[in-house]
Length: 275
Image (cartoon, rainbow, N blue to C red; front, side, top):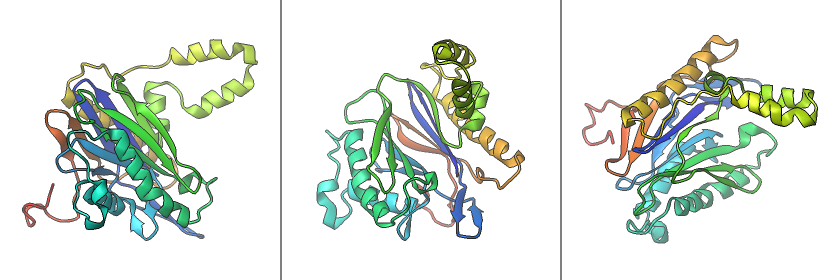
């Protein structure tokens, strides 16, 4: 499992994710703490993706497959010239379509039962379309069934979203998690659902204001991952959220910038490689 966080303000959007990934076999499970879940999708354009759920696609990790996608979008894969983005007219939704084309058939070929949530790859595709002043974000859910696409952050929307293991941050800022809502709605009469919904909404505390300075949005995104990692650690069972926290910011002036990033190699010993 994992936690992945999006924070969107006027000045741009922030992605933050832990590094834990769980390998499940018939008899056991092993948690590794070095998975890459945030990928820059173009070296010169403000585009990125963030993943959760399924950790591999066929015999490739999701991060390696995502970097193959980046090569195609940048026009560096000889057999995929039509995939190269036109820097003057590309859209984020166009990238969403390429993500589906890149990943979906491979996941279908794995023949995994679609009713198991561990067999779904969640992808957040986000950034700025050419000529746009504000960012947008799409959620893509991929398994052996039909792809599901939702625009979660429109150009004029602001706030925060968490994906995968959301209990900790939902309890912190929303006052409850989805399991409590489902239990209460099943318990009270249907004609009281609207009133119950109002009570639950009154518990929400909103930490994001649209004019929030970008460094504060970065700090919030990282904090939400840290809270979830601590919550997971102190509950009984394996640490399903953990490892280094990767954080990236995207805005229309500086483009994609890493804030925190792990490497399996030393940047000092590999000049020019730590990008």
